[in-house]
Every structure is written in structure tokens, then in C-alpha cells.
Image (cartoon, one colour):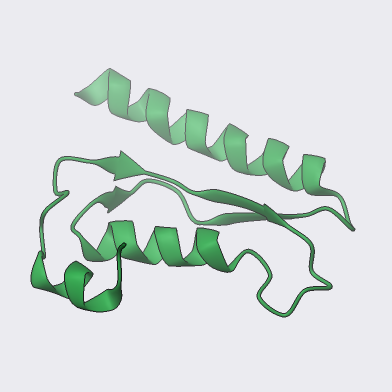
Amino acid sequence: SLDKTTIYDNPGALNNVRFSVFGLGNSSYPKFCSFAKFLDEALFDLGAERIHELGLGDELCGQEEFFRKWSAGVFKVRNIFLLFN
């Protein structure tokens, strides 16, 4: 299991990783996309580089459009990294 003490005991453990997280959920639940939010924060806290902001898709309201917009942004940033690295 991964908890906050484990994360903070290993700063920089993922400093060679680039990431972006997209979560799917239902906003009628009180903890809407909480795992995606936790994962985004945990990866960043471990030293990984966030290449695009967290994306959240709500199954009650346009999740496909949110995903299309998020994924277009991720691929744009990814292609920039490929050009310059």
C-alpha cells in the first residue's frame, strides 16, 4: 500500500518519469475522482514531472469532451518533448 508517509520518505524517487493523469468518475459521489487526484499528487511528490494538468471526466456531463481536450494537450506536450529531447 502507498500512503503519505511512504511518499514523503522517498522524495525524488521518480525524477526520471513524466506523467499526466486523467480520472473518470461520477460527480454525484462525494469523493469524485479522488484516486486520480491522489495519484497525480503522489507522482508529483515522488519527483515525477507533470507534463499536463490533471484531467477529470464526469460520466454525468461530457466526459468524452473533457478527455478529448485533455488528451490533445498531453499529445501536444509529448510531441514537444520528442522534438527537443
